[in-house]
Amino acid sequence: MQHVLTDRVSDLKKIYDENIELVSVARSSSERLESLADGLFKRRAVIELDWRQAATDKETPLRQLECVMQTQEEAAFLANEINFVNKILRELLDCEEVRVRVATIHGLMCPKFHADHVFCRMLVTVRGPSTEWIACDDVQQDILSDSDSDTLPLKEGKTIRKLLPGDMSLLKGGKWQDGFSGVVHRSPHEEGPRLLLTFDPILTG
Image 1 (cartoon, rainbow, N blue to C red):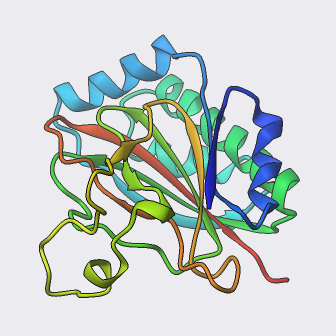
Image 2 (cartoon, rainbow, N blue to C red):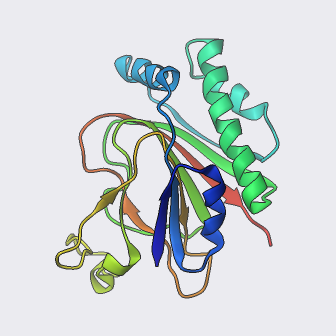
């Protein structure tokens, strides 16, 4: 399995290649989004939003965010980011619905390496440490499959990789294709708060 690191949104379509496990699109940093996140961290805001919506619905993200943001402007700006990603997923995957999660995280959320039993998942770390992952060929599968083991499921001489803050990273899950159980990843083992957006396209085909 291979992965694609790119700066072109159009390269997300490469996720359909059965030999590609992950596509990550680098984006220019957004001072407004970073400032918004820093404000949340400074006031120790705890945000744990989780909803399911039509992929074309542009109103729900704003309604959800208005309840937790200090200003309408903040809510609208982050809602625009969510709508942007939803539009990409709708066009790429022809999905009718998307599960969206918005969270401020001040500790380890998923500390052990694992793969998600979903079709695919888009991760966008707006600010802070980003998700760590292991390339498929670098995973020590016997260790990964042992749920009681605290040993890193990493082959000797291989390294843990990191997604970059701000990037749109699309990871195949265990339901995407036969013979592949999904991208192996975990929460970053690096100190510092983060603002994470998670998108699960709901595929019915």
